[in-house]
Image 1 (cartoon, rainbow over the protein chains, first blue to last red):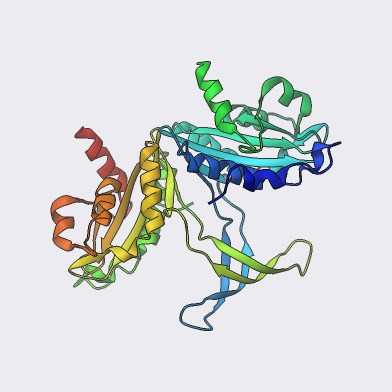
Image 2 (image 1 turned 120 degrees about the vertical axis):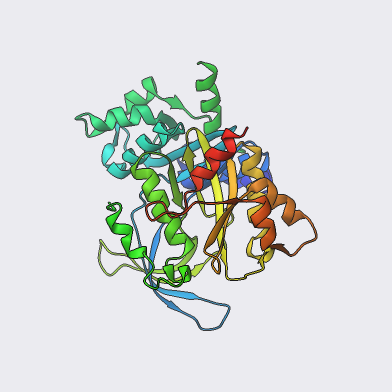
Length: 189
Length: 189
């Protein structure tokens, strides 16, 4: 159990001159956010474990198994999924250090196929993209990401995010409050 | 890509005297089922990878990472989730060799908490339980499982499954056709 907001205070930037030193990466902050959502019973979302191919396991005792040889596998889906007010949620998260654009090679073709498939089943699907240089985190709908990916471009300019996607609000308790964006989008319907 | 029904013919029992030798376990058959559902675009459901705590990784080259020490972790959720016709699906699967009952110690308390949480968010949640002795696979609603778990009993008798849960249909192409049960339950509403 995480104590709010005490447990998160360590995220507070130590240098007041720059937010770049907030020091926590996107995955960590999304995990904190999901933990918070679960604690207040707002949504149930988890990061999926990284798939690993296990080759060799030792059993030094009946209780303990030690994996001695294993390899990382490429995930065939997005990293996060769960349920929110009856909707299935499904999303991927990426950060870039570029100041000018997000390179589309960071998203795998099978992830795009997965986003198409879950959209077709009625999930709320999206991609969270952080520009670490600006400490800005954007919510891109799966529909937009699929369109951009299917075109000829190799990257999405930073200006596109500013104009055409949603800035995800940040605060110390909910570092990546993506449900606020979902609520806003649905309110607009 | 799996070829249907050719690729599944190897599941055909070699001894005609008993279905016990069908030879594939529940997880394998659920994975085949989910693959089939994805291929015909009926639902998008995956088994989550087993969570593993990685302690030591070697990098013999820039490309390859070899995990040299790692440990299995206890999952905090159920094993399977996904999306079906706008609904979030969430379920656990267990098999038992007992002919008389299913021992509730096979379900972890945190999995019951997880089932409660996803139900509260509107997911379709359930537990698939196979009696290997009878080659029968049952669909138990999360509501029923939570009720049974919260009582004083330590196991659920086989007769309960026959009377109060849903037998999941089997065929070679869709070995664990749990969506048929979901469709039936919803039709009855």
